[in-house]
Image 1 (cartoon, rainbow, N blue to C red):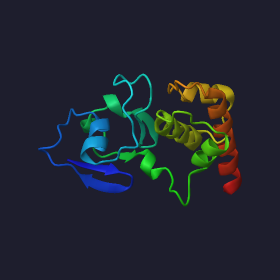
Image 2: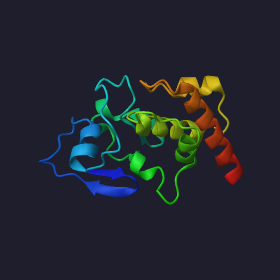
Image 3: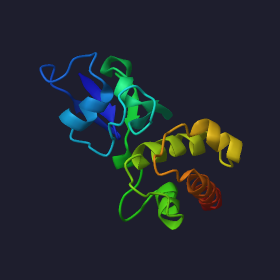
Image 4: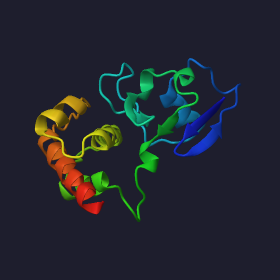
Amino acid sequence: MDLSVNGQTRTLDDAAVDPTMPLLWALRDVLNLTGTKFGCGVAACGACTVLVDGQALRSCVTPLSAVVGKSVRTIEALGTPDRPHALQSAWVTHQVPQCGYCQSGMLMAAAALLAKNANPSDADIDTAITNICRCGTYPRVRDAIKAAATALRTKT
């Protein structure tokens, strides 16, 4: 099975995967992309959020067969240590992470939001970011998303 992951075609050995395997496990266990986290396994928490054709998607309940022919983007492709994405920079500036476990999924959901809405309101953010953060840093998440939105708007 071929998948487009982070801009590269990745061939998954048919002996290692089944079309019904959740995308999360193919990313983590087959492709060794461990930035996407397992949280709840029922699409409630959002720790496993990745982008599929630009849309935020919970990978723990998404079968591989649903993403064949689509573009999958994980946290590993959001930015680099030398050139972090505006969201990653804002996350640090606004001290969003505490335990950090939910952060990769939250960042990917935020990236999907900003790709569609360059100037989101609090209500827009609350609607788009349904990820659960046990540390409760939601006010900082909103501030960081708004700061990243401003940075992205002024960059272009």
